[in-house]
Amino acid sequence: MRNEQEVNRAIEQYSDMVRRLCMVYLKNRADMEDIFQNIFLKYVLSSVSFENEEHEKAWFIRVTVNACKDLLKSFFRSRTVSFEEVLDQPAIMPPDNREVLEAVLSLPAKYREVVYLHFYEDYTAPQIGRILGKNVNTVYTILTRAKQMLREKLGGDGYE
Amino acid sequence: MNDRIREAFDQVQAGEELKEKTREFLTGKIQGYTKRGINRYPYLASVTVCLLFLMFGGHWFYFTPTAKISIDVNPSLELGINRFDRVVVVEAYNEDGRELAASLNIRFMGYREAVNQILENERIVDLLSQDEIMTITVMESKGTQSVRILSDMESCVAKHQNTYCYSADSREVAPAHGHGMSCGKYRAFLELQKFYPDITPEEIQGMSMREIQNLTDEMLKEKGEQHHGEDTGDEREPYAGNGLEDERQKNNGTEREDKETIPSDGHHRHRHRGTGNKHGSFMKRGVE
Image 1: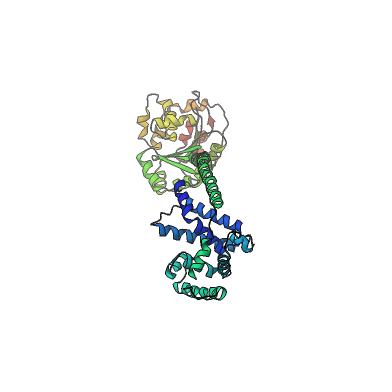
Image 2 (image 1 turned 90 degrees about the vertical axis):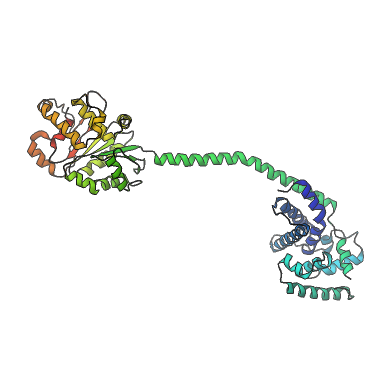
């Protein structure tokens, strides 16, 4: 079991990333909170010794993605789909950002996760393939299609 | 446009409220785990104690002999019988006994089957055919088990020549073992000691049951007539013979005396049963 200091550091370091990943998958705040807390509980109880920070970050991504997917499979999960609830911060979100997020969240789940990891976390396709357990070519295909869809939704040609 | 996505996601952050809630949640859980860990010890301890109790209690319950059968020819063996009528101990009291025990596989077998296996053992059959004597002595114990075993042994010996069945007081077990003898042989020693008060257990140890019997017979021959006159008229218990008894009775007249008797010294009580056409006088030991 990890000590309090380690846990506080992990919360400070990875909570935003976990929160964003939850948003990519989940449709309501209650589910997000549950997953968020459980991810850090898993971290507390986990005996995995991380080789470096990258390893630790990849662990958080993998565990969060799996937890969200498991929840989505659950029959009893809440199915609220209000965008305001998904964002949870509608009042302070600038319109342009809101538009982009709406566009990303409107993509199918398998596109959303790849878009987030590639565009925000700067992972390459092979890295995403390793983290998500997907074939690299599949990741490339998903990325290409996601860029097309986003271009259609948001206009412009700057998605590379 | 990549920057637009980055900026948009930048707007999504885990608020302080969420982080604080998570810290509280984790604190509660960690304490719960720790507490549970601590509280688990008494629980684990009691479960362990119960398991140990069951293990040792079960072991004791099954492996403690509640009855003993002593089988003596020259090989001297004692079978410890548990409450489920299974042989749990096979103990040899001389070298011949050890050899015999090594050639048998009777542990955990029902006692009837075990005794039958001994009676059918090649070496035992050979000894009995050479005029040796086998005694099967059942130690008396509380409850009905020893009575039942004795009854079974009686019907068992009835089918075999030169085989006799006795019961003996369980108080004889400790002194018998103290002298390195099986209970059956010790019982025979006590019998003989009545005629030869100076005889010691060490002198008896190396003797076969036949040799002990011969000594007893000699004394009985001397005192035979007197003993006939002293018969107390106690209950006589016919035994299930093998048909040879009738012949012996014809030969010896009133020689067949099969009875239960309580010696005046009160040390042991024995019931003689047996069969054999050549050693009817052996049965006289029951007449005191």
